[in-house]
Length: 479
Image 1: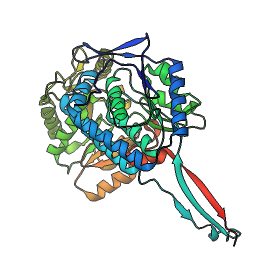
Image 2 (image 1 turned 180 degrees about the vertical axis):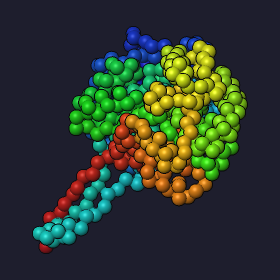
Image 3 (image 1 turned 30 degrees about the horizontal axis):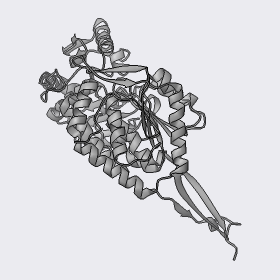
Image 4 (image 1 turned 45 degrees about the vertical axis):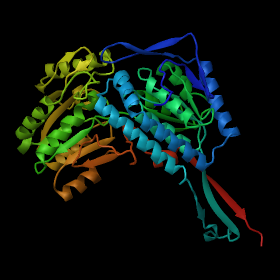
């Protein structure tokens, strides 16, 4: 076990752990017990962090083999501490321990994949003699680091969504300033300690903790950074895009994921997967199943099966290995989801299962008889609530999925290859998942959406491309 496991600590800037008088408590989301106290950054700290990152890139550029070796060692250290990190996630994020273990193991693979990408960054030659007047010119382009990265990450995946930004940045040769969610900073602190232990030079990872409306805003507006990578709400993402100026921006935002269950689908498979993916992590992830469109011929059978699958889910303490659904990130968020459900019921929706709340735990809820204008349908619930809507034709189902301001991922259950291809071509989302739910993600694939779901793509290879830029080089050869 690594020695870098003390939770109560300060900011990490230029290789130093700093303290200040301003502190913030971190709570166990199930018991409400204080599990850590961290230092809150000031604007001066953000300035110091950005300056340190720029100095690191200027004075200590990392060759590809070093980036590879550092990331590989980091992956090994995270792997050694899977249980410790998973337990930390279960407490500070309220995520069931079995899901937290999966998340940490995914993070290990993301870091390993990013390490390999560090050795694959390359350009190509350009045949300039194909253009009249350039017969004596030879051209090639290389990829260079874009510059200092400002990364703002959410609470729902405290390690995996952090490494999806940090690991590719290091692989690309960029220094990074990280601001994790203020509700879940402890996992990010531990990651920084492991990066330090793995030999990452001072200044290449800097950690600032504080609220998004103060420290987050100051960081993303800082003139010393060259790129912002953000995962969070569409409203904040839009502001970042508006204020980004000439900086590059990658935005991973919201969704109200549509899923189609056609009449020829494997109903048992669809019901089981959709129930798990609607309510895992208490529905608090952007591709969580929210809208389920079911062919009218199988509506009754499917509804019965997903109700049964949902009732089998265990709700309770995240540290219990049997738990499938834990608390939401806060009482306020649980109350919001309950209000949305109550509002839908008042307007005619019917509860198939759930609908009740106990403190910060919102029980898995399935609604029918919903309307497209209800918040639980047209907005992102970001909670353990899904709605079932019947349809007549497959084209109708596609139109229903596309009737959204979001466009991250969609799921389609059908055994008909022609219909699967039709869905792939006509559904307007960043990803279309056939015979699985909208929630499927392999960390190596390009992940991202359109419209209110964001801009740019994540996944180690694709993030490295976002975090590097092309430099064209032309030789005028004198013979």
